[in-house]
Length: 247
Ligand code: PGA
Image 1: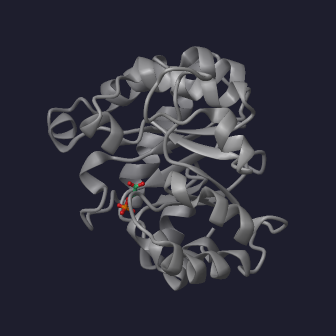
Image 2: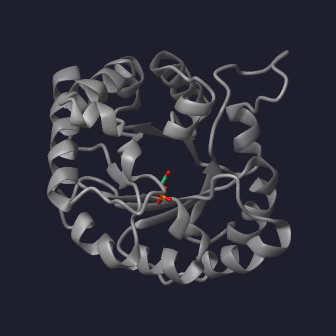
């Protein structure tokens, strides 16, 4: 405790428009300085808009995916260096929606995290089990495997990578892990980082999955929960800032 940064990071997913984003980014830019750090991960076309709105302030911005490659014939992909050109300092990797809809494997997620680190962008590595995996008693095995695949990059990051535990059954469903369930998995993640030889005490581990203003404070007060990755509620300025205030 005390060693780690505390974060609230918004994941806009495939939402937003130039006109609609302006007020949201304006509110984020004007957020009172809280105890933690504030970030927003926006769709690629809005990176320039996020940069214009947030540059010089306390909040940071980033993308929701990154190529494992540095450059070349990879139609549709975006490199970490391109994110840097737009001032991005964060990027989500391995979000469950990408694992599910884009068939991303844990090994690919590790290579993407590595590409981000190489460019000086902080990867937010997302892990989490499905409902079936939890009900079968495999939640820790699944998350442990997702972490092991990232061992090399976690060692190299020396605490500079962020982890996000997002149980798939809690994402966008309104079903939140209880603070005790979330804490138990966060403690397991930190113990696994220790076993892997990574900087367990210095690594921020965020919880994601239906975090709202009403449940954020209790989740964030757990010993191994260092903040949140926020989907739906990050699209409404008042909700997002209320969650940040709960850090
Ligand atoms: P949610 O999404 O807050 O809408 O559940 C979280 C996420 O997918 O990062």
